[in-house]
Length: 72
Image (cartoon, rainbow, N blue to C red; front, side, top):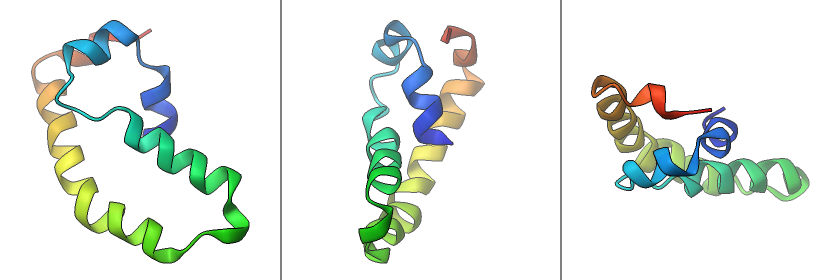
């Protein structure tokens, strides 16, 4: 869901919140969708356990600042 949502955001909004790596969720989503027959569980485990918590924290910060209104 994060990958699909990140792709839909307006470029200006992403530029305003450049502290977030907007490409990562969509890259992971694309990897899962396009390569589901060859997914290594380590590829999924690392983002989920190491990267996702800080990513969600950054998203919550943007939302608390009222940043949710910057999308299409």
